[in-house]
Amino acid sequence: MPWTSRSASTLLLTAGLLALAACTGPGSAPPPKSSPPVFENEEQALAAGTEAYESYLGVWNRVVADGGLHPARIDEVTTGELRTFENESLSKLQELGWTFSGVASLEVFTISDWYSKPDAAGVLIVGSACVDMTGLQAMDGAGESVIKPERPAKRTWAVHIAQGTADQRPYVLAKHEVIKEGSSCGE
Image (cartoon, rainbow, N blue to C red; front, top):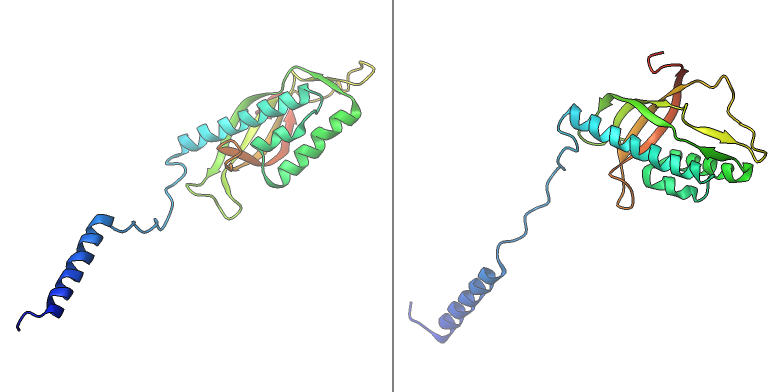
């Protein structure tokens, strides 16, 4: 086949396209088909759950110590219906005019189940938290204690923990319900 100006043009066009392709580098890799697991093992899940609950309790204690002022601070450590409930409950403290001293403290956090990826409800950890309530005191506007003398010393909560969003802690509470009360966590 003799060389023509058309053959030369085709060759130059092909060479130019190959050079252009070489300059752009390889195509981007396809997105991964699945995300890596959140937790590799139970120890990681337990550590994350404990940290999430301690974060929640720390924020809750600060809001309570401030008499319920700025209850939206709890949004950093809660999600879903629990977030709404906590905001409404903490807001009522302002209306009541109660003052608080001391703190509620985490005594034991355990997990009953954990998932390497969120379940359908977004939950990663299912567990329980036993909280020592004896350090928390509350007074009404007249300075009288609103804590009943028969208040249990310990309260155990069923807890669900989910991944937080960009404006939250890494793990947040999605459920928080009292399941036991007594003088110790083992009751």
